[in-house]
Amino acid sequence: MKKSTEIKQQMATVRKDLEGLQAAETWDKAEMKAKELMDLSREYQVQAALEQADFKNFTPEATSVSANLVQNKSAVNRIFNKLVLGRGALSDEEKQIMNAAGSPGMVESNDGKGGYLVPTEQFQQISELRRAYVSLKSYCMVRPAGSKEGKQPTMGEEDGKLIAFDEITKINTDDLDFGQLAYKIKSYGDIIPVSNELLADSDVSIMDLIGQRFVKKAINTENDKILSIIKTLAAEQYEDYKGIQTVLNKVLDPAISATAGIFTNQSGYDYLDNLVDAQKRPLLTQSLADPTQYVFKGRKIIMLKDSLLANDTTTTAGTTYAPFVIGSMADAIHFFDRAGVEVAVSTEAGFTTYATMIRAVERFDTVVADKDAMHYANIKIG
Image (cartoon, rainbow, N blue to C red; front, side, top):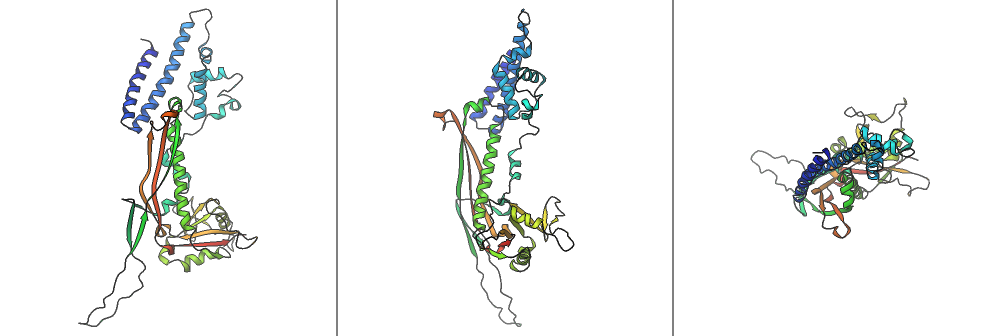
């Protein structure tokens, strides 16, 4: 039996297994099986071409293996796509084919002709992509929500004292009031149609790329809702960085101040990063727990983009104030998470366009728990 025939039989078996996994909606295993089928498909094309070349070697007009394969435009395109889409290093045979096809043209051995397209690192997994973005959700108090609507009991600040009493006298009777924190889950979603031809012919994991987009959108949505709460805080102006010290020392409750974070934008961080004391030492210091993290007065600094947390230039003409939101976001904002991000795939919804619809839905609500746990300070920076 020819090697190509054997590979073709393996492809039929794997395809049958893949159809079963797809029907059972076992997507993780189906994705692995799909990759196996694509690998076999590439192996079959190369083997079939080799066998065809071996047959032609018995005739006077025989050509080299690489020249024969170059005539197969589909094989050349697939190898080039492998370079562009980051499917790993080329085999020796694939390099031979690509170099022969690319003279003059696109070749891996010449950076200017296409070698620069060969990636030097692999795509990250979805769980790692969140690290590339500041997710404010991680600083909130995240609570699982068991239903669409609900209430959580809360207890406010206690200013009362125990009352002195004499022997055999009645002890003072007091009352205890509880509050309620109400939430109402809202749904946010996105649908991405993907061509069935792309899913069938692509050598990359399309789901990884789409997952990357969903992750970005989910973080953007969460941040937007959290920042909308922060921006409702009444901002107070301070003339310099000492305003931050005042907030930590006098405005915030000592228990909140001890674990406070300082949220600012790029302009605010740059302002702090350029400050020095009388001995020309920077006021920002490295965290002992994490040397890559800088702190101010022992409090962690979280930097957001200027586009997310904008400077205030409207109060005084020609003067810029950078935002510094100081305090405990976990005490100030509760994030009620219904079920995380749900991803679903439908091949029926895109029937008329021959597409597969991939949908992501996130359900959550953000609620103010303790408005005094964070203070919005506008610090003059220029």
